Length: 276
Image 1 (tube, rainbow, N blue to C red):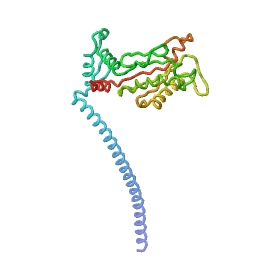
Image 2 (tube, rainbow, N blue to C red; image 1 turned 120 degrees about the vertical axis):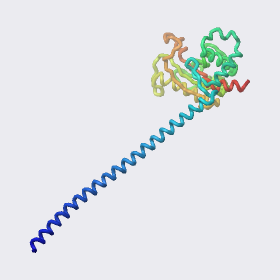
Image 3 (tube, one colour; image 1 turned 90 degrees about the horizontal axis):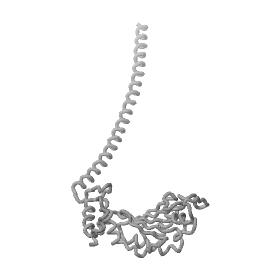
Image 4 (cartoon, helix red, strand yellow; image 1 turned 30 degrees about the vertical axis):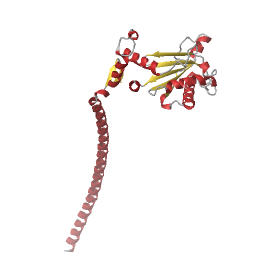
């Protein structure tokens, strides 16, 4: 009888031991599954948040597009590659009614008409008469911009980017032109001749052309109150010459600073209309 009891106890204990191992294994597996479920839930929530952000941006763009199509005057139209608003197109037509017929001789496209309208308004709105043209200053209106080219001998000493005091008069006149029309910006371009340059302050012609442009921009901003948001500085090095770099005179012609007057077309025509 004793032997049977001992055997039974041994079987029970062995069975109990095996069940405990299975239990621990199942608990471990259960924990891993819960962890994976939690991770999956977090990833799902992150993906949903990203989707909601993208959808919000899409809705915002759709709203803008809808507003353009609802307001006919705000629609954008293309004129031979130039994109303007319907309002600007109407203002342009009104301007062209005031342009003398003789000016239409070379007008063949809608873009030509737009350029003609802008030229007419620029000449009437900006006083460039104080900028007397000579061999060191040239003023041209090409398409939708006014280009004023100034010889570097009026602005800088040789190989220097510090603005000379003798430039004060011309820069003051330029500032008056830029400030005369709220709708315009001005790009100041530095140009050099092809002779190489390298010193402690200037690495090469790219460096010199950019430094000269930024010097003029700072002068216009700090001394003549041109709003900085209306100014752009650019360097062209010697890659846009107006003459061959084969003589002293030609190299002098290539050393220049060009100020390009850029009207914001929509604002420009709107301001012209408000002055009538």
